[in-house]
Length: 330
Image (cartoon, rainbow, N blue to C red; front, side, top):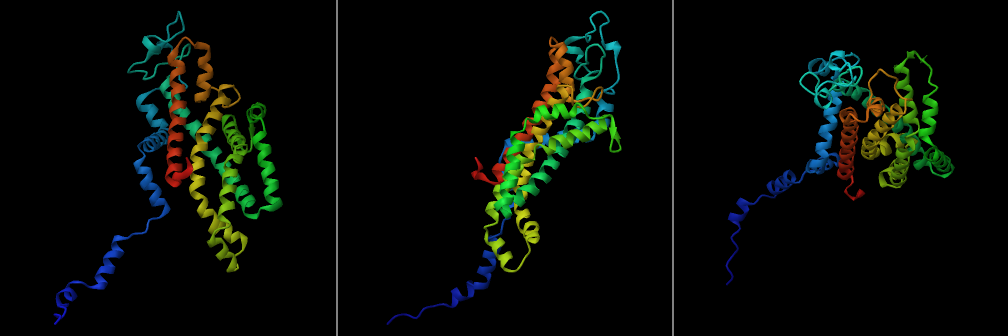
């Protein structure tokens, strides 16, 4: 005879409810943001770039106390640090020392460290706000072109082509050169900063607009958009509640990559003498002044390094964000 099965022990040890509860605890949903953060944490190069970006932002915000603690006012002349015979800084390597951390400028003796720290505020302000202008214009027109398609897409697409083919640097030089001394409640360099933000941002939107358009073309065919349409949702609701939230990741990534481009553009305009007027310190303006003293490497080196490190940090961090949100984007 076959012995009966003894199920008493197994029944007392195995409970389906407890097994399902344990499985529920073991399996946790992960959002796109969390998955991207996990990937980004493994990218040490991108994290280093992000840390430098945060440091630069803090330096620009707290530039005044940093200058007070470690330097001298950026517009203050220090003739005692200049050799009266040669009009060059006293000491080795442009007067670098405990008194002047990065030395002083020839002829006038202004503190290079203080001017670089003060110039960070101008460069980052223009870089961030010009990028914001580009993102607003590019996202708006890109979403409209990608979602509605047809003649709307063709018109906006041709407009993007015109802006991309436009000689931006030449036009910016011509326009920046005729900026008035006062207007819109601003005057002097305050007005020039506002105009540079508008000029750079207004002519940089097609790069992000094309990306947003391409993403929108893909999103408008997704199931959740079709479901919203079938429920009678209006186009405005679909755009703001369904499409735009799914565009935040690519917009963030490419905005991060656009910031260093705008910083370089501002530096180029200041270098050419049509950006921020002296004596307000800017990195491009410092390089322009250093051209006359090409035999003094420190005068060119430090503002050049500031631009190089800033652009490199933003690019490394932006590349890391792109890889984190879309590993197939290589």
